[in-house]
Length: 446
Image (cartoon, rainbow, N blue to C red; front, top):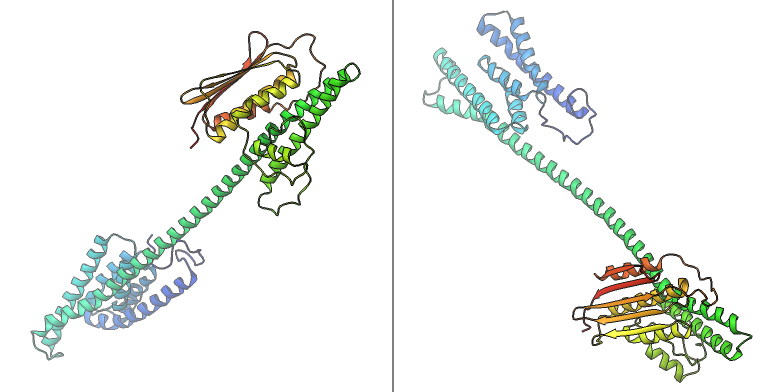
């Protein structure tokens, strides 16, 4: 089936092979007009052929009514119009049939062959009829004008409908291709929108994971040390009041550091909002505030009260000694060794290395209180390696602080290290302890 009228994408609302009802009405109207024309011309054909007039009229009506099938079988309509050309009937049928054929999606060679057949048939019939009319005396023109008239008539009947049909068919195909391209672009835009939504959801999930990991790294260590000191305070409160006072001061200091770091993180999360009203800072304590940073600690030591501290950069490896001292103050035996020449690296590398050591020490406080711990840091040409290993906890260790564990510490450390292209390994040792190792690419700070 060839479609020459409406687009294939249009909804089918017409009967049988018509796409639309108005197309069926148009074809039926053209078929009736063609049948009337061929029926009228059948009278003269019957007289010339010597057959009854009724037979000629019926023949003309049947032949002309086949124009209704032009959308379904355009080749058949053109062949019938060529076949009845010698009977001097079917002019409307030939014109409309050639237009429909040229506008269809048939190969150009078929269209050209059928158009040539129609042109040749019209030319031959016109020449023969013109010569007969001159012989009968009905036409009084020179013989030299007969070929001109025949060629002009045949071209006038064949060329205009073929050219118009080719133009209309090409324009229709162009519109269909543009429509398909627009539909394709719309589908692509919809797909891109869905992918953008998926990426946004993925980004939100990654951001939630990052915030949870930072909250765990920032708070868990401080709170763990607070719980350890509180347990030690409970144990020595009556036996050694002086040590109890020292432990109480350390607990308060750790609490203030945890609050400070929480405020810094909340300040980053609310960076786009209006700044909150300044609140008085805690009173200075003898233990330095490592998490606030060196600048914030110096400012806090110079003034008794100040506005809420502004967010500062994350911790660095230069503060590792101070981190180890805090664990020592909580009663842990920690041996820190540094290999290689220390140097400044990228901020994210130093922060990740610091967080790995911090979380490993926190796990020792939670699960192996009193165990001797070794912290090793090695500066290599292209990487930084760190290892935290603790031995088995002593049988008669310190009082159980009952520290809760969510099981996310090791997962968070591995995520941080692998995000920077490093390697993270953790697991128990043969001696009954636990070892955490990480290697990070050392991108030098510019």
